[in-house]
Image (cartoon, rainbow, N blue to C red; front, side):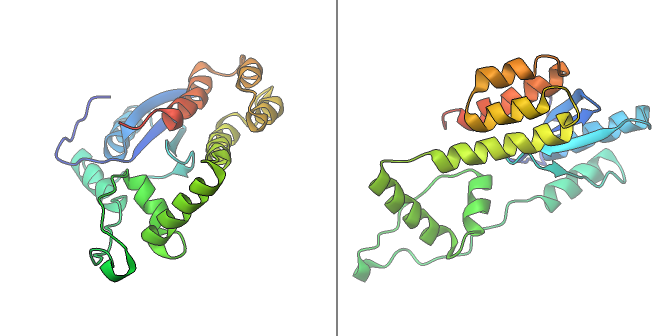
Length: 201
């Protein structure tokens, strides 16, 4: 989707549906404006919007002009700033280093007990002990995909079977059970896997 508001940048991405049909996908602010324009033309539209990183349903305040909407959304969903921290603790052997993460990663870290630094240390220690076990990551991926599936396909034929295949890690079986689902719903389920498994750039 073309970015209609380049000066109102957002690193958070979502996808909007009108019923089973995908309406728009991209930065929060851009999708919010696209939804408002669609609703202006089709007031009876049945809109659902999902965050692409969590699979959770989200809502936008669509009052005002397109720019009003974009600015409000960008402000409402701005990533929280990291609190200033001292540059390491040399006496304890702690050396400051730069860590590059996406906003959603910082948000998750900030919500953990002890804050970002303590959580990163625990993750590194755990990974160094168990060889980088990725079961927790897989579980999060399954859960976010299930959230979207439940909202959009919970009443569709094959949902229970597809869900069991999802949590069993049998993606080919899941695709088989989703075969009769609306194309855009099925494609977005698979897109969630691709986005989360894509290598960092």
